[in-house]
Image 1 (cartoon, rainbow, N blue to C red):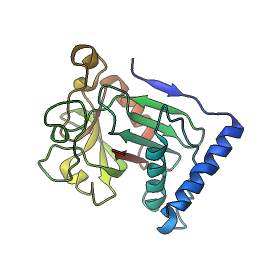
Image 2: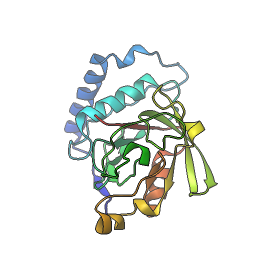
Image 3: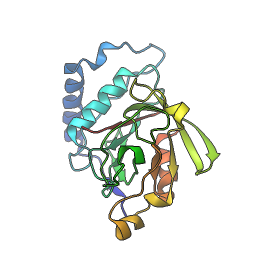
Length: 220
Protein backbone atom coordinates (compact mmCIF):
# COMPACT_ATOMS: atom_id res chain seq x y z
CA UNK A 1 0.00 0.00 0.00
CA UNK A 2 1.73 3.20 -1.14
CA UNK A 3 0.28 5.58 1.39
CA UNK A 4 2.98 7.06 3.61
CA UNK A 5 2.12 9.24 6.57
CA UNK A 6 4.60 11.35 8.49
CA UNK A 7 3.36 12.82 11.76
CA UNK A 8 4.08 16.35 12.98
CA UNK A 9 7.43 17.15 14.63
CA UNK A 10 7.83 18.26 18.24
CA UNK A 11 6.65 21.76 19.14
CA UNK A 12 10.21 23.08 19.34
CA UNK A 13 11.15 21.53 15.98
CA UNK A 14 7.86 22.74 14.51
CA UNK A 15 8.51 26.34 15.51
CA UNK A 16 12.15 26.25 14.41
CA UNK A 17 11.23 24.79 11.03
CA UNK A 18 8.48 27.36 10.56
CA UNK A 19 10.93 30.19 11.10
CA UNK A 20 13.35 28.59 8.66
CA UNK A 21 10.76 28.43 5.89
CA UNK A 22 9.45 31.90 6.62
CA UNK A 23 12.99 33.27 6.31
CA UNK A 24 13.57 31.38 3.06
CA UNK A 25 10.35 32.73 1.54
CA UNK A 26 11.18 36.34 2.51
CA UNK A 27 14.68 35.96 1.09
CA UNK A 28 13.28 34.71 -2.21
CA UNK A 29 11.07 37.80 -2.55
CA UNK A 30 7.89 35.78 -2.49
CA UNK A 31 6.09 38.53 -0.57
CA UNK A 32 6.50 40.99 -3.44
CA UNK A 33 2.90 40.37 -4.54
CA UNK A 34 0.53 42.00 -2.04
CA UNK A 35 -2.24 39.92 -0.45
CA UNK A 36 -5.67 41.48 -0.28
CA UNK A 37 -6.75 42.34 3.23
CA UNK A 38 -9.90 40.25 2.88
CA UNK A 39 -7.82 37.07 2.69
CA UNK A 40 -6.22 35.93 5.98
CA UNK A 41 -2.45 35.66 6.08
CA UNK A 42 -1.06 32.27 5.18
CA UNK A 43 0.09 30.20 8.15
CA UNK A 44 3.76 29.85 8.95
CA UNK A 45 4.52 26.43 7.49
CA UNK A 46 6.82 23.84 9.02
CA UNK A 47 9.63 22.47 6.89
CA UNK A 48 8.62 18.87 6.29
CA UNK A 49 11.15 16.07 6.37
CA UNK A 50 13.26 15.71 3.21
CA UNK A 51 12.19 12.05 3.22
CA UNK A 52 8.68 13.20 2.42
CA UNK A 53 9.02 16.52 0.57
CA UNK A 54 12.37 17.74 -0.69
CA UNK A 55 13.19 21.10 0.98
CA UNK A 56 13.86 22.97 -2.28
CA UNK A 57 10.51 21.87 -3.71
CA UNK A 58 8.68 22.68 -0.50
CA UNK A 59 10.15 26.19 -0.38
CA UNK A 60 9.02 26.80 -3.95
CA UNK A 61 5.53 25.60 -3.12
CA UNK A 62 5.31 27.90 -0.09
CA UNK A 63 6.61 30.82 -2.19
CA UNK A 64 3.88 30.10 -4.77
CA UNK A 65 1.27 30.00 -2.02
CA UNK A 66 2.36 33.45 -0.87
CA UNK A 67 2.53 34.84 -4.41
CA UNK A 68 -1.02 33.68 -5.21
CA UNK A 69 -2.40 34.39 -1.75
CA UNK A 70 -5.11 36.67 -3.07
CA UNK A 71 -6.67 33.84 -5.09
CA UNK A 72 -6.23 30.95 -2.65
CA UNK A 73 -8.98 31.17 -0.04
CA UNK A 74 -7.84 28.27 2.15
CA UNK A 75 -4.15 28.04 2.98
CA UNK A 76 -4.07 25.53 5.80
CA UNK A 77 -3.32 22.59 3.49
CA UNK A 78 -1.66 22.11 0.10
CA UNK A 79 -0.78 19.30 -2.29
CA UNK A 80 2.64 19.05 -3.95
CA UNK A 81 3.44 16.85 -6.97
CA UNK A 82 7.16 16.08 -7.18
CA UNK A 83 7.62 15.32 -10.86
CA UNK A 84 11.38 14.91 -10.50
CA UNK A 85 10.62 11.47 -9.06
CA UNK A 86 9.58 8.36 -10.97
CA UNK A 87 5.93 7.33 -11.14
CA UNK A 88 7.02 4.12 -9.40
CA UNK A 89 7.37 5.91 -6.06
CA UNK A 90 4.91 7.97 -3.98
CA UNK A 91 5.42 11.58 -5.08
CA UNK A 92 2.07 13.31 -4.46
CA UNK A 93 2.40 14.97 -1.07
CA UNK A 94 -0.68 16.04 0.92
CA UNK A 95 0.72 18.55 3.41
CA UNK A 96 -1.03 20.00 6.45
CA UNK A 97 0.64 23.37 7.00
CA UNK A 98 -0.78 23.75 10.50
CA UNK A 99 0.50 20.57 12.15
CA UNK A 100 3.15 19.48 9.68
CA UNK A 101 1.63 16.07 8.90
CA UNK A 102 2.26 14.76 5.39
CA UNK A 103 0.68 11.88 3.49
CA UNK A 104 2.30 10.77 0.23
CA UNK A 105 0.54 8.90 -2.58
CA UNK A 106 1.21 7.66 -6.09
CA UNK A 107 0.23 9.95 -8.99
CA UNK A 108 0.52 9.62 -12.77
CA UNK A 109 1.86 12.17 -15.23
CA UNK A 110 0.79 12.85 -18.82
CA UNK A 111 1.72 10.67 -21.78
CA UNK A 112 2.92 13.76 -23.64
CA UNK A 113 5.40 14.37 -20.84
CA UNK A 114 6.86 10.87 -21.15
CA UNK A 115 6.43 9.65 -24.75
CA UNK A 116 8.68 6.61 -24.24
CA UNK A 117 6.85 5.64 -21.04
CA UNK A 118 10.06 5.55 -19.03
CA UNK A 119 8.24 6.33 -15.80
CA UNK A 120 9.90 9.74 -15.59
CA UNK A 121 8.42 13.06 -16.65
CA UNK A 122 10.62 14.47 -19.43
CA UNK A 123 8.88 17.75 -20.22
CA UNK A 124 5.94 19.97 -19.34
CA UNK A 125 3.53 21.58 -21.76
CA UNK A 126 0.66 24.02 -21.47
CA UNK A 127 -0.57 23.45 -25.02
CA UNK A 128 -3.93 22.01 -25.99
CA UNK A 129 -3.60 18.53 -27.43
CA UNK A 130 -0.17 17.92 -25.89
CA UNK A 131 -1.44 15.32 -23.40
CA UNK A 132 1.38 16.56 -21.17
CA UNK A 133 1.45 17.57 -17.53
CA UNK A 134 1.89 21.26 -16.85
CA UNK A 135 3.79 22.88 -13.98
CA UNK A 136 3.03 25.61 -11.50
CA UNK A 137 0.37 26.49 -8.96
CA UNK A 138 -3.23 25.33 -9.39
CA UNK A 139 -6.36 26.33 -7.52
CA UNK A 140 -8.53 23.33 -6.61
CA UNK A 141 -12.03 24.17 -7.81
CA UNK A 142 -15.39 22.38 -8.07
CA UNK A 143 -16.25 18.71 -8.46
CA UNK A 144 -18.10 17.06 -11.34
CA UNK A 145 -18.77 13.59 -12.68
CA UNK A 146 -17.22 12.87 -16.08
CA UNK A 147 -15.68 10.03 -18.08
CA UNK A 148 -13.33 9.25 -15.18
CA UNK A 149 -16.07 9.38 -12.56
CA UNK A 150 -15.95 12.01 -9.84
CA UNK A 151 -13.26 14.56 -10.67
CA UNK A 152 -12.08 17.96 -9.49
CA UNK A 153 -11.39 20.88 -11.78
CA UNK A 154 -8.12 22.80 -11.47
CA UNK A 155 -7.50 26.43 -12.37
CA UNK A 156 -3.94 27.23 -13.47
CA UNK A 157 -2.54 30.29 -11.72
CA UNK A 158 0.71 30.65 -13.67
CA UNK A 159 1.62 31.31 -17.33
CA UNK A 160 2.94 27.73 -17.43
CA UNK A 161 -0.48 26.21 -16.65
CA UNK A 162 -3.12 28.83 -17.39
CA UNK A 163 -4.71 26.57 -20.02
CA UNK A 164 -5.45 23.88 -17.42
CA UNK A 165 -9.17 24.59 -17.28
CA UNK A 166 -9.57 24.61 -21.08
CA UNK A 167 -7.47 21.43 -21.34
CA UNK A 168 -9.58 19.72 -18.63
CA UNK A 169 -6.50 19.09 -16.48
CA UNK A 170 -8.19 17.70 -13.37
CA UNK A 171 -7.75 15.35 -10.42
CA UNK A 172 -9.36 11.95 -10.93
CA UNK A 173 -8.96 8.32 -10.01
CA UNK A 174 -7.64 5.76 -12.49
CA UNK A 175 -6.94 2.03 -12.59
CA UNK A 176 -3.49 2.71 -14.06
CA UNK A 177 -2.55 4.68 -10.94
CA UNK A 178 -3.26 1.85 -8.52
CA UNK A 179 -0.34 0.30 -6.63
CA UNK A 180 -0.98 -3.00 -8.41
CA UNK A 181 0.53 -1.44 -11.55
CA UNK A 182 3.93 -1.43 -9.86
CA UNK A 183 3.83 -5.15 -9.28
CA UNK A 184 3.11 -5.89 -12.93
CA UNK A 185 4.83 -3.01 -14.77
CA UNK A 186 7.17 -1.33 -12.28
CA UNK A 187 5.59 2.08 -12.97
CA UNK A 188 2.20 3.71 -13.35
CA UNK A 189 0.31 4.23 -16.55
CA UNK A 190 0.02 7.71 -18.03
CA UNK A 191 -2.81 10.24 -18.07
CA UNK A 192 -3.58 12.93 -20.65
CA UNK A 193 -2.01 15.50 -18.37
CA UNK A 194 -4.31 15.03 -15.38
CA UNK A 195 -3.27 14.25 -11.81
CA UNK A 196 -4.52 10.67 -11.77
CA UNK A 197 -4.34 8.89 -8.41
CA UNK A 198 -5.33 5.40 -7.27
CA UNK A 199 -9.07 4.86 -7.26
CA UNK A 200 -9.13 3.99 -3.56
CA UNK A 201 -7.20 7.14 -2.68
CA UNK A 202 -9.27 9.68 -4.58
CA UNK A 203 -11.58 10.47 -1.65
CA UNK A 204 -8.54 11.15 0.54
CA UNK A 205 -7.19 13.68 -1.99
CA UNK A 206 -10.58 15.36 -2.34
CA UNK A 207 -10.92 15.55 1.44
CA UNK A 208 -7.48 17.12 1.80
CA UNK A 209 -7.84 19.78 -0.88
CA UNK A 210 -11.53 20.62 -0.82
CA UNK A 211 -12.48 23.68 -2.82
CA UNK A 212 -10.14 26.69 -2.68
CA UNK A 213 -6.76 25.18 -1.77
CA UNK A 214 -3.58 25.04 -3.82
CA UNK A 215 -1.86 22.22 -5.67
CA UNK A 216 1.73 22.81 -6.79
CA UNK A 217 3.53 20.74 -9.42
CA UNK A 218 7.17 21.03 -10.44
CA UNK A 219 10.32 19.20 -11.41
CA UNK A 220 13.06 20.76 -9.27
